[in-house]
Image 1 (cartoon, one colour):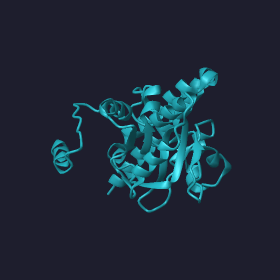
Image 2 (tube, rainbow, N blue to C red; image 1 turned 30 degrees about the vertical axis):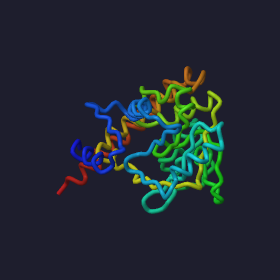
Image 3 (spheres, helix red, strand yellow; image 1 turned 135 degrees about the horizontal axis):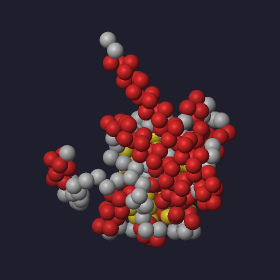
Image 4 (tube, rainbow, N blue to C red; image 1 turned 60 degrees about the vertical axis):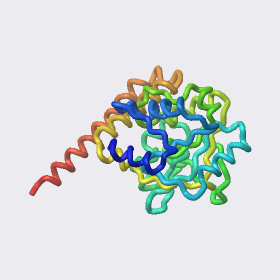
Length: 250
């Protein structure tokens, strides 16, 4: 990995590589890079994501003309050209059974509960005010980033983007989904190598988000949400083990 990174810097000498001994988590990594960055905007882009054309330049120019917007995310596509649900409303009770990766959303994507959680892109490509956009590709105004002290590093992986946008909006900034610009995201290339760990991190961060941002309701409902989330995690982990056991049989 180190040799590959060194080769990348040789090929693109303008890249500044930040070497670290351990993985501090997504948010902590972004914060570390932001402290060394010099630009007016920060572009968060997953290593398995590819920008289309001049999307980065177009997003920056769009932010130039919309000074009240703290972060903007483009339309995110899967490798097969289908659209990922990368723009969403803040999670609520229905997110548990009608979130982006839920069975209900996959089986019946147009159901009213999934539409309550996921933002459908405007066919015209017009920008839409939303609650949050995916950190897979997000352009952030430096002023807004610094106003909310960046990402909460207690989120190791997952939900840190929702928490970041929650704090942006609470501080008076807008968050916008701009489906006129596009990126292709080869989803899960990294997490697929450590599926169990990714599942644990997802559910742990979901509970942290609820405890942090759920207000008074969280004080009352935390035990129930904890049981529901970790029960769901246990079922998913058990499913993985059963599948592995089945595949290993002669």
